[in-house]
Length: 291
Ligand SMILES: *Cc1c(COP(=O)(O)O)cnc(C)c1O
Image (cartoon, rainbow, N blue to C red; front, side, top):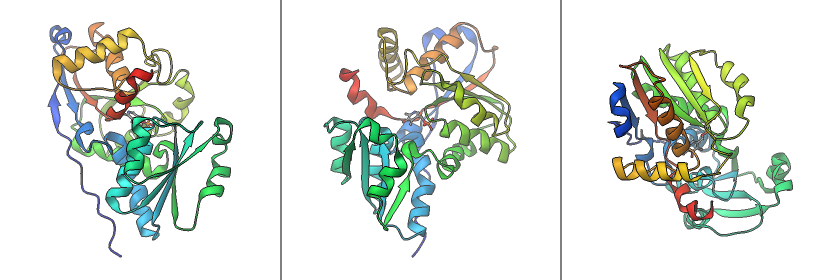
């Protein structure tokens, strides 16, 4: 069987600015990873690339993965499975519910199994319960070495001597970027923006990548994972109306608001070239009325 071919996604680098940034003399660009696909967007596309290739090499016909009921990874796996010819199963944390994200995942043919929060903690047990011979297992959030490898590939499309901003959930995208920077001998300063409270536990993982040129901003969670406040929601509306770019309230909106504060506090020297990775996840906006 020919190796599964997954071509490079559409992802232009665009000039990006807010009126408040103008006095600071920066060059800011947005890497539009959100435009790669409506539902396999951003880092989810990149993190799925090598697991899908691996699954196909092993002759697997199904993908099995885990996620919360609003998980971008669940939806991306459902859509990618449908696109590249895999059946998909999603094990969903919590009581059975419907929401727009799960409805879309089912539309792409994903079978859903709900399990209690308690049972969800034991992924090995769940995997042994649901994994069949034809299933390829993808960890929650695509958080695995193959995922990191794909996530790091975006660097090949970016120049040196930039400050590269990326939101951080599981940390696999950021870790993949740092590792790719070492492999490609790049001079890039990375900024990770945590969307979870108490994300310091991720530091050893980032340090072990051996690219020491990074800052990890742990004060960008705005109350905790998936929590919002009026300031964040107003900022997202400002960005959308002033630039035409949508960002979600769970990941990219938080990164952008924290970056906005750094910029307007004069954190960056004039002339600094900043590139912001837009890692998609716009389906999160479908849950806005629920947050
Ligand atoms: C999943 C996701 C992230 C977090 O990526 P990790 O690799 O888990 O750190 C950031 N932004 C968006 C839009 C996502 O969907």
